[in-house]
Amino acid sequence: MKTEKELRTCDKGHNYYKSSDCPTCPTCEQERKPESGFLSLLSAPARRALEHNGIQSLQQLSSYSEKEILQFHGIGPASLPTLRTALKEYGLSFKN
Image (spheres, rainbow, N blue to C red):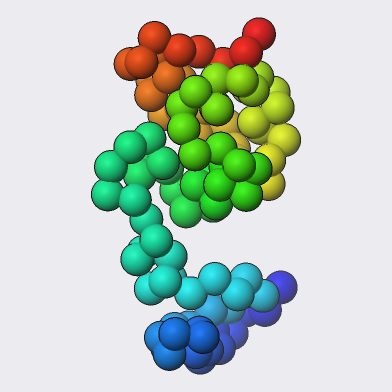
């Protein structure tokens, strides 16, 4: 992993500095963040992990167990309380 920050430019022309090999532009990521819904409550890596696995709704999320969700790259234990609360508000829960 790099330790020096490197100036980069994304495909949309945003300039940003990164010290890692991660190609994600912070400006583009902020523009993609939903304004409402359960995905708006999550960190960018957790949101991308769910989106990458085709999870766009709480109904879709409820078809997975917590153990399955934790296997997604970008989802950690800190995301689970937020997801549990969002599911509970709609009378849903993770699969057992």
